[in-house]
Each structure stands twice: as structure tokens, then as C-alpha cells.
Length: 365
Ligand code: 13P
Ligand code: SF4
Image (cartoon, rainbow, N blue to C red):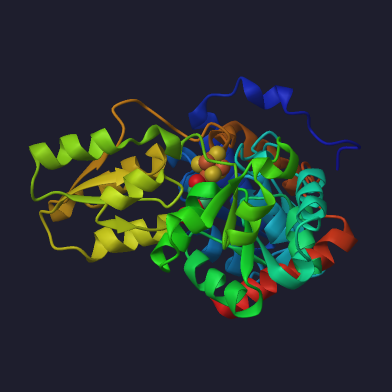
């Protein structure tokens, strides 16, 4: 065994084909000791090595169900944190590239959420009146905040049910960090738009008056996914004009106007399942990340389904794409040699409280 981990430098210049061989050999060596989880947005040359794939809800369930010693997470940082929190004792979670974050998750931080809670307490008692709901796309300490304050985690698959759960307990919700998922989910459950106010964490009192706070049912954190903001209503209108029989499906991280113009709105798993269940020879416009759209376009082509990406410009999740064959080969070969690189370990206190909020979510969904 080498005294120290093999440095990544030696892998950065490797060709993808070399990496492919190395990944396959390392997987064979590790056998059942390692499991590779892959989110739908992973690039094709990484995704194909995943043993288990899914959207963030499915992956959060799967992460607790595997007995492997090592969970190699091909996704982004918050997903690997969830795998660590929900994993079995002693299980080691690794993220092949630590730079694989989520820019939306970074739009909310614990100090800012704690400040919002303090500011809200100038108007009402938040622990009595407000359920904090964090989208799974958030750091572990924010999930812990929700666990501690009677709150819960949601994903894009279950946000509606989670809002029902929240309103059954308290009259308002503070929803972070994605305003778009929060707005769409609130709208779908019948909450008027004027009862959903944007909380700007960079403004005192979120930029709201005490009256606006008192009247709001959902306070929507001013955060967004840059990838999903690329999709515009005019893309849908143009598609409908060219293909009146075409069907539009979008991820709920898209703008409200895009969701409203879509025939279906759902998580990455829902998008795949909806198109899979549709009749042959249907035509689709899909508003979500490019790697997923390209993959399903190929998969469903034999059924005559034509799948088109919603934006005319290429928009990929650049942080998801940080996980490349070079980093995967590096991670796995270190594991083969008995070295763990890039372990994701959530501090115990945060993990315990975050697990409370995640388990509430899993019980509801
Ligand atoms: P899903 O919950 O659909 O997997 O979405 C995760 C995500 O990051 C979308 O941008
Ligand atoms: Fe985060 Fe958006 Fe990438 Fe999803 S697509 S991981 S929300 S930056």
C-alpha cells in the first residue's frame, strides 16, 4: 500500500479511453465493497459506470440502503452529504471532485438563514408560526437547522406533499434556497401568488415590510438554479408554433412562466418516466439539464420519440460536469490501494439534526 494517496496530477492528462479501462478494472477489484451512485445529470462517460442512478429523492433513499463499504457519489456535494448522513455506520462516502458543488445550494447559508429567523422573530414567533423547508439542494447545516426548528427537507419530486405536511403544523413556510420550486409548488396547491413573497437575504428583513411578512403564506428565498433560468417562455411558444402536437415538460426549478406553459412539470425521474410512458412517435420539448436530455433522446429514439432540448444555447450544469472519467479513475484506484480520497464527512451534530429533517421527508414521501 502506498504511504500516501496517489495525487490527481497523474490522472489529469489521461485520455478518456485509458480512464475507462482503469475504472472498469478498479470496479472489478473492488467488487461489492464499492457502489457508484450517479445522478441523471452526470455526463455519459461517467453515468455509464454508475451501479445505481436516480433523481435526488431516489438517490437519498438508495444511499441508506446499500451495504457497500465505499459509496462513490457521482453527483454534487449536497448529494454526497445526504449519502453520508443516511449511510450505514462506518460507510465511507467519496465525491470524486470536491469542486462539484451546486451554485443554487450556495445561495443560502446558515448565517443568512439564522439571520432571517432572527429578523422574522421581530414580527412573529417563527418557531410557532413558520415551518422552515429546505430543498435537498442545500448544505447539511441547513438541513440540520430544519431538523432543529420543526422543519423538513423536500426534493423536486415531493415538494407539494412536504408543503402539505408543513402547513398542517404551522401557518407559514420559509422555503429555501430555490424560489422557483417553492413558488410552483405553492401555486399547485392553490396558494395565490400574492401570498408568496420573495425573501431577499441581502436586504434587512428580507426586503419586506412587517405587513407583507404577516400576510405571506410562503416566504421564498431569493435563490435559483442558473442552468434552469436559461429556459424561456419564448422557447416553448416557438416549439408550439412549429409543432402544435408537441408536448412540453419542464423541471420545477424553471421560472414560473416556463412551468405554467409546460404540459408537465416534474423532477428528473418524473421527466424520464413521463416520456417513457408516452405513446410512440411523440415529440417532446424538455426543460432540464442537457446531459439528461441528450441521454433520453438517444434512449427513446427507437420508439420514434423525438426529444428536443428547450434552449437554443448549450446549458449544462458545470459543477455536475466536474465529475469526469479522470476523477472517477483516480478515486477508484486510490480505493483499490486502500486510500480514501475526497471523503465527505458531515460533522456528527449536524448529521444527527439533518437526519431528523430527512427522515421526516422520507416518512412523508
Ligand atoms: P432532481 O431532484 O430532479 O434530481 O433535481 C436535482 C437538481 O439538482 C436539479 O437541478
Ligand atoms: Fe445545482 Fe442547478 Fe446544477 Fe442542479 S442543475 S446541481 S440546481 S446548479
